Image 1: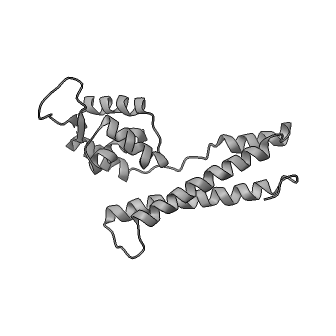
Image 2: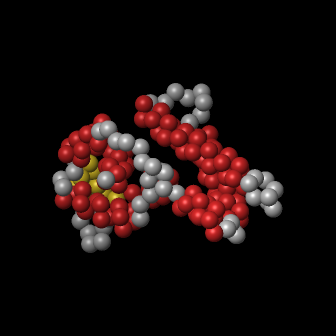
Image 3: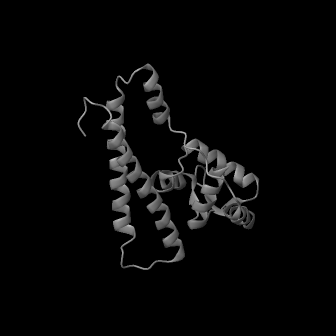
Length: 180
């Protein structure tokens, strides 16, 4: 049930059209909660039907004009309740971990190359996160609560990518034909 909450969050940050939302998901929210364009548009319709968002009135209605949405009080109340709700952590479900376990049973042919590919992907993501942190959260700047909370989320991403790069490097060391 988190996609509607991700959309409500994004719309509270800035009223947007469906297209703008999908672009914002691709650039920020999508780093930790991904959604396809179809999922976003489908969810916008559900949120509008539920009375949690509405399309802003257009100055001059024209056919094919994109709708810009804003959050209504019911949507803000739902998001506020969701933020306060207790929720247990979810177990990690990563196919790579399962494939590595299966390799222990059927053999590890190709596994080291796949681990190297994942390592490169995680290193690249870590570099992106660090660049965002340097650009958006300079050490000397004291931001608003909203800025500090966004930075905490980014720091979580940095720590996860740091974990993955360290763990993948250690995992690759277990393959005797590879040098790490």
